Image 1 (cartoon, one colour):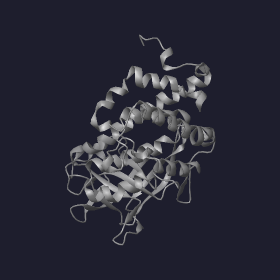
Image 2 (spheres, rainbow, N blue to C red):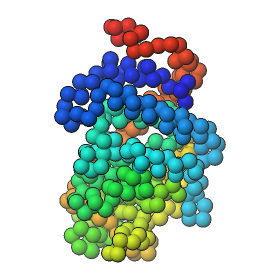
Image 3 (cartoon, rainbow, N blue to C red):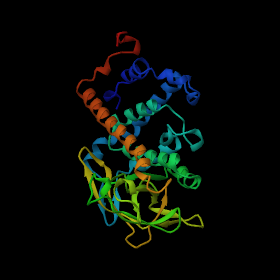
Image 4 (tube, rainbow, N blue to C red):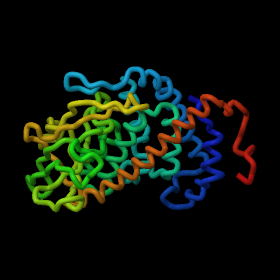
Length: 331
């Protein structure tokens, strides 16, 4: 991967253009300095060299596939999730109290850029898990946070963003996935979602679908949308995982990201799918915009990183001996 990624250029952009060191004066980032930033960048590069770049071509040639009710992905993904959980990569920008590193988002995006440049099939799995967990950390109650954040940030459970429906496409005001009250926090969920990135595979033990649905009797349009945590396996009163009646029934393949699972989910086919309300009813779209906007940044990062890898693949200028100090000062 090193020949497709110029670390000198990345450091130049971080320190000389975007002045990341100016963020370090704030108390929130007191545990970071220029030396620790360099260490984190090198750690991301080492991980990318070892577990991302060697598999990018194979993941394109042998894409994710759906068979007999299961979604199959490249086996390296299980190792990726384990490493991410053990080394804190899933909670880089989270508050310390939520199990995160409290890293500047600029630095988190820089490490993600390295991973994306190495293999753009993989980082989306991690990014959606982080985004879903961060949504719970921001708007969920203490019960949701204590139940879902530890296994998600440890890499044992994956996370998704479930918005789009077959009949609605991008028109979220037309979603019909329903939520029928069990009590004020628990709801029976029924409906379908499509194009759910990272929505099912065998690299993790469970999936936490952050799902938009409409509570029975809610206003029409976007004003009646609520947000729910809908796990593939829910935790029962004994602390055991039981199937929650949400399953993948098909896989779509992304052009250029064939190693990235993208599934069709069906909720409540057996009338036994339970969702946990996040925040207040009818505020779901407002909450979801946190994750949607994070995904927009990640999509832009994917484009920039893929273009960067392509550029260095055909013009490997990084073979020159350069340092940050060699750039013209007026840059």
